[in-house]
Length: 186
Image 1 (cartoon, rainbow, N blue to C red):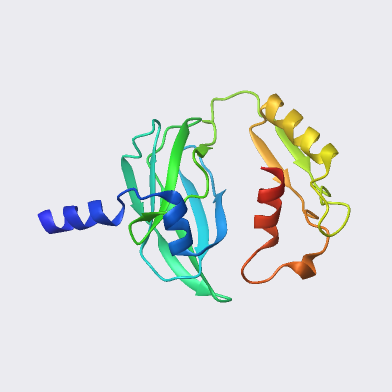
Image 2 (image 1 turned 135 degrees about the horizontal axis):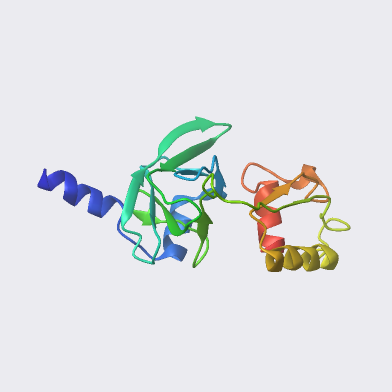
């Protein structure tokens, strides 16, 4: 039993994100899906096989640990971790790990569970067509302004309907359109 606990502690122990991210070859930045009042799924992809995991908590301790499932498709190793037993409408900090290294591409990142069924109001925003004017152009200032306005309004859900990059043909296996969008606007 002690060996299992020690192995888990080593597997998910923090490492320097900049060093770990290059080691892990992160290809698809983490994204949130299947959010309920009690659970959330976080997925990401790398170019290297390893044991993936999610650490999360309502403070910065990252004390909850979940091992990620994985599968390979189109040359990427996809990871998916499901956090369960969460509080409705609560915000959690999280980090993703691979092979014991923290590969989270941001200093601080959170998810918020869906509100409980007794919650009255629900707000959402839908946006799309915010790509740059041409290949290599800087981010669209109007799209950045709109993103800031949406952030200030604090909707419960934001839906992206697509058309986020100028020319999808410039994407390759190493750099997805989603990663291009995240770098430009966040």
